[in-house]
Image 1 (cartoon, rainbow, N blue to C red):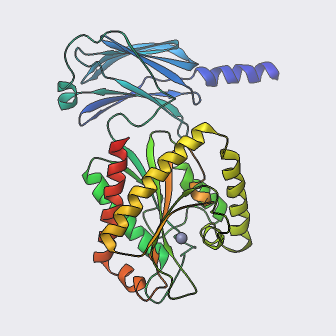
Image 2 (tube, helix red, strand yellow):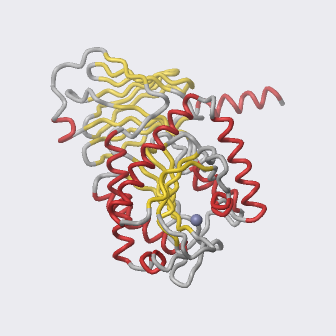
Length: 365
Ligand SMILES: [Zn+2]
């Protein structure tokens, strides 16, 4: 039985098919399925991109007929893609397994105009080591999370329902980002939930950004207050709430009631654990930068009350693998902001500010 298991494991661990090749504007993408998520170091020498993996693949070789690439060889832990002359800037990323999709090694080879800017001098042996994939080399990727949806409409007032406003704003932001060459993934693109269970729903949203090629995760929400005087815009990144601050907002956005309290408690523990984690601290610093850009653009664009950049234990942005923020774009309960949020022209202005801030951020990286 043990031997059979070992054999099965071996079969699984060595499974690799011929790569998939995609031709895109400006680059050719070569994708190898991996038995599991691996780390990689990439060495781009004259005429070839060599990737050393932490997993062993079954030997294979073949020709590739696409711009910029000639062929590939897989041997043990090494994958080599032979490049056409002048294509020395190939980049490799590892994408972790997601759902039914296997982990992948993605090699992007610039072509056409992108390659034309690369000097034709032979590239001297150059070692590029990346932590299992950083940003996609050519197009930033952003996840937009329209808060709530489906069985969970979020806040509701005589003027607006949160789930409708967040989806409309997210779609507008998507349109603007795509217009500037950013890949956009939406957590939902209709009035739906990702799971009837709130914790699973928020997990599913947050997982969309666990792919390390994601530059930013932006969750959009509408605030509510029992006090009609409550108004303004605030942007959060993940962390401990300020001392003495009530947790009512995080509890509400984490599902409300005793469930919201439980998820907030879990997320707050997570925040405590991250304090000693240098990588998490670096991500928090990126998240703060993104939050500051978004908040500042939003206040300038709308003239709304500035409630500032804050930290709190929002479950959906607790995952520290990418810059992640949660924006409360206004109070749907406010007689001032509720009617504004109901207007398409105002939502367009809000979306424009968010999109410009995200563009600033992904291009400053
Ligand atoms: Zn919300």
